Image (cartoon, rainbow, N blue to C red; front, side):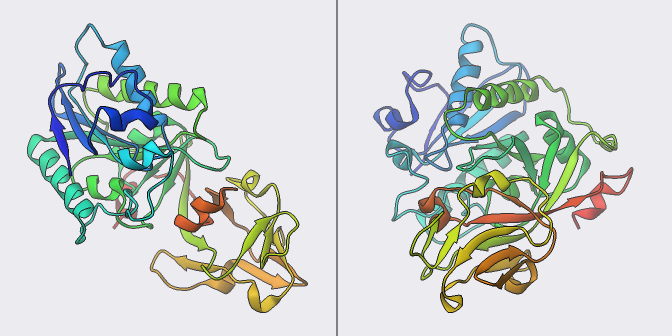
Length: 342
């Protein structure tokens, strides 16, 4: 499935994500030389409707069109087929950001091939670039609370999210090779997201090394994803008024990264027996009653929570989830950040 090349495909710097299929037969791993090694690894378009990563790479490479890169760069261009239709994934495909830790499909095998290649070549750091479908601030995500990971994340911004679920994500796989982060760059089509991602990649290319000392207390706002919320397949939903099983508030995605007090209404319903949410904690345990109450035909927060990735895109909610729930963590203290990830 994978095309691997040491040269930039013709027209790569100018083609939009929806036209990548005209120059690439499918997923591609592109290795470009630089003044230092090992290479920085960057993955883009693991979700075909999230073009900011491709646009940022194109902007970066135009910047270095007639001069060498500060560091070697390996670029993985992911779901070209879904990008053609501006979809997260096609119906017959697995999610390209859930298959990095092994499995039995050709796509699983491709990710293992990429990991083997980058392990043999050596990898300085890994960046996976994404967009959100809902309104979220720009933030970085890490799978390990170790100092190099947090330094890399803080280079993108103050807001950092630590998570271990969902599993099979690119960041978790590359964390075994090098410091790795996912960066969330707002909604597709926002120029600021492209500029922010491009500047972050450029800054990483200029690093001689990633610090191993603790991040200065107060330099980051650190959050921990504690649960994922899904709408069951047999439960219908809408935003605002409707005859569906659940009617979420119309401004649902404006609640992202807000610390919601207990009693905050997020939805209404008519029949209690039809209104359900599925909520799992990090260990995969059902915790449906811990975070929301279903009283008086309203779904309200049962405890103080902070959601992320709330979206008004019904297809994305069906393909992935409604949201994640987070709690605030204290700033890492000297000598303790690495211990948290064990």
